[in-house]
Image (tube, rainbow, N blue to C red):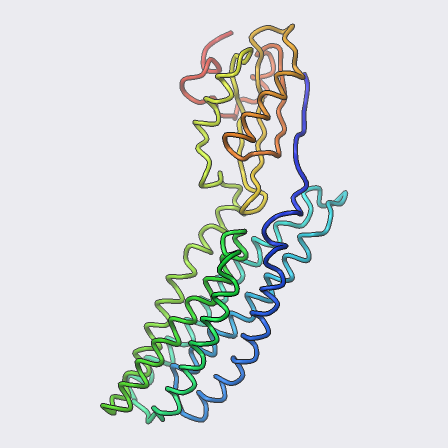
Length: 315
């Protein structure tokens, strides 16, 4: 039996590149959030307050993203052998759930205003919403390049982008109020902002939970991985195969591999298996146990031997 660990240092990834941009976006978001809150109160606009609430969640998201990046740079310890990179996923999940809570509050107040309309200062609302749109577009441009570097950065970008659309909705509502006196436009836009918040955050929450549940990365086909391992000369079968995500951009794998011939060079086989996993599937953190016989399989009675492999037949 032989175990092999093959991995790379996970600290030099896209998150580090995005850290300065996150800092700039956080400063801009926090500053305009205060301005928009004041504008919402002064002009009696729920849409502006909804957008301010959304920007509060943006500020929290950006702040959590920065904290997660800093924590993620810490090296593994005896108590946390994978390091602290999962902080990114926890931050992304918290960001998404925070958005849901804010959407619920906004929706409740919007329904109340639909039942009992209130006067809104359309011109002031238009000025503040226009400034908000400009600020959000600048922030989206700042974060655009690194938006796919990690789940955390993607979540921050989605916050900013959805908030820009919220500001656009507030502008439309303000124009409607100015020219038609249709004050219901304000809570109606607030409801649309709620829907937008829920839509933009659903994928973020879903993927965060998937990773925390040790799900297979969406870019990886488990069957294809298994077949690629079985194609290597000297491999009889593969069992107890597990693939999961440590973070959104770093996958890990563990498996038992049984040799065709006990005398085969295990070190060379491990090298070949890891090359295949790294080059074809982007999986560079692996733990592969090489076995010369099938004698250990009864000890893993609860494992899955997939159809099509010799693991399913008596040996």
